[in-house]
Length: 131
Image (cartoon, rainbow, N blue to C red; front, top):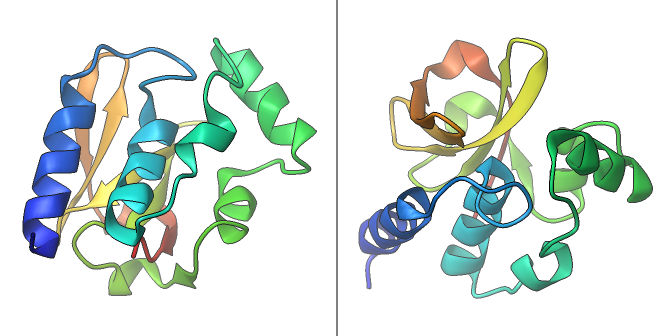
């Protein structure tokens, strides 16, 4: 499969799942993309680590992080947000919360409890090579 096909299949599968903290949220959208493009299995290490937003923040601190940026630094290589390519993972600052998104080329998509949400480069605070 080409990178485009992998990204498309992964996005379609993850965005079709009902939003559920710790199972099918923006964090797991990013993890699924990394796993699909790199052949890794990070999902297993994070599965069901939390069930609420507060639980997600506790799980992050328990792993020694206060930001998704530093957590993803331990998983994949960082790149400049403007250099992100199709399928790369980004951290978006949306209001007071960080969200994990996926680079679609000129814009970024994330999964929210209200559905998918599109954003631009100005919302990105970090980017990572997914594979």
